[in-house]
Image (tube, rainbow, N blue to C red; front, top):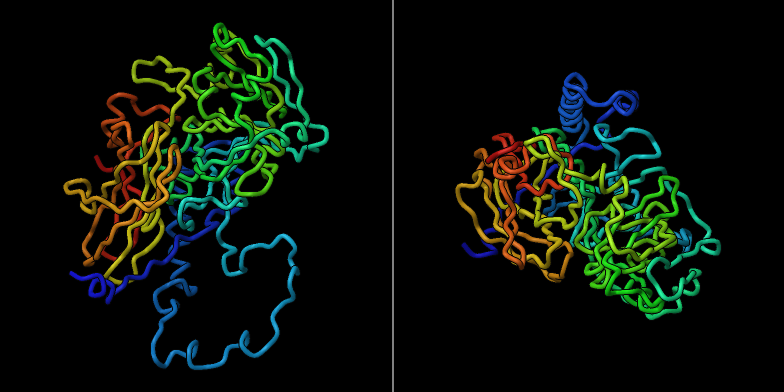
Length: 455
């Protein structure tokens, strides 16, 4: 079928409901955790929000319909006949009021206390691969501060010839580099290990972002300090927050592409993402990207800090723990259509999603619409970069029958994203971290898209 013929009957997607949980329920779960009763209430609230959306104008009849007699094209609109707002009325700028629903949000299942919590990026509303700075996901272990850059320092010590202390001005005078990379929390998709837990892609995969980072290579700072690269096999990165976040990084990774960064997408880091300085460790889970970075120590053995020996570890089926997991394995997810959205008509749809790997570039993404029985190769959109998100698209004509949508990524090292049951055979069902399984979205005959687990 020709492209023009294919697009003659474009489908319509109704977006997923937002903020469908009452504040007292979120507070209850934050204080007491999730149980089956509260999980049932979550599902009920989500289904209620879907119904309310249809009743209040989110349905097919409320969506814009274009045609020769459309008043939007044949009649003068107010913005064509009156003066607009002056320049710089909003000196820093902000999104349109018509996009205000797009926000990062907290999930009640993971929030313990306000200061040690996480917010999820709304992947379902993004285009391309870049995450806007205001929507970059957050993970705090003891809250965030807006630190005065004039009072912030970075120290290099340990197995070095000369201990160094840098001001922000010192660092920003050094030769800088800018690179695009994804960052993913090790707990992303963690709630899905045992069963379907949350309804939308924002909550299943939203601890994921991708930005252009600017800073100075860590290798340059280590060279300036005269680091002992024969005996020094590791570095310890230490944050300036109240949790004392510290992580060990093997020297071969530290010397490869690790960056001490102060900028994100062309502006200084946002405070909740580590302003004024954070470590960028491409391909490695987000907890190693230490925010509010204050010290780098060179040592000859792993430091075994609490956030690598006790937390961010994997509970295996035999009851042992796997420690020191670093690389984020190959992974992908379909963001449209995805959970909570609804296909309002039959016809053409563009299935779109994101793929990434901590081991290199994305080489291929296959998409299935029948639960994994048949696969078709998706288009990879440029740019395709190392340890960076890659956008994929594929054409699909929905005929109104039930469907199971899945994506399966392959990276440049040959690693293939696993099915959920294959991953469970090795890792069990009681882990929290490092779930890179294939995500399944069920499309019902009425077009509703829901989170399911297949294969």
